[in-house]
Image 1: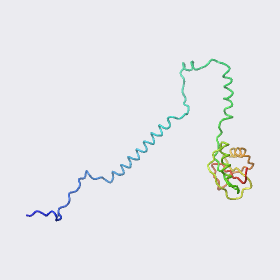
Image 2: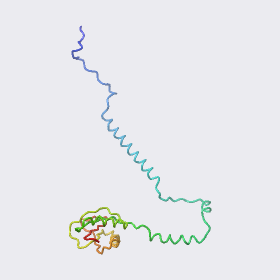
Image 3: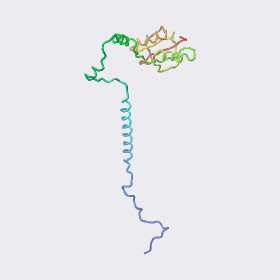
Image 4: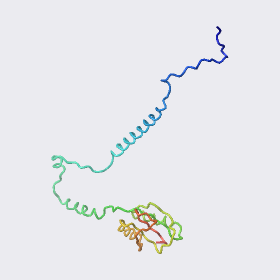
Length: 182
């Protein structure tokens, strides 16, 4: 019997890799699943930690001794502090609708400059663009639920024309179309 030469190919099969050293194809989805769970856990922790510093008042019941210590003796000051309390609702921030401003004139930049005035008046401008079509005069268009807000915006900008919104206008905000320098 002779031994096979080193340069001759072996007819014996190559040894197979042991099963435990192979990566099972189903382990890849489980790695992705673990990654997704990690992302969700980090997001949940971020939400919990991020909401811990809010300034919302919480209802607490003071102890009877704390109430007795914190209560000042009656003076003329409570009368003076009662007046601003009754005036607070009149000066409270009024919720404002979103506003889109459109230029329907030949004046370049009219919508941008008017949008700045609208924001200075306390409104939230969510879009500025050109309007194509014929509008007789500067107009505030409103969906039915925002009629009072439309009248308030028109008064802020000294615009006389206020009309219900029509297609293709959006029905969740006010639409201001400008036809000339206000």
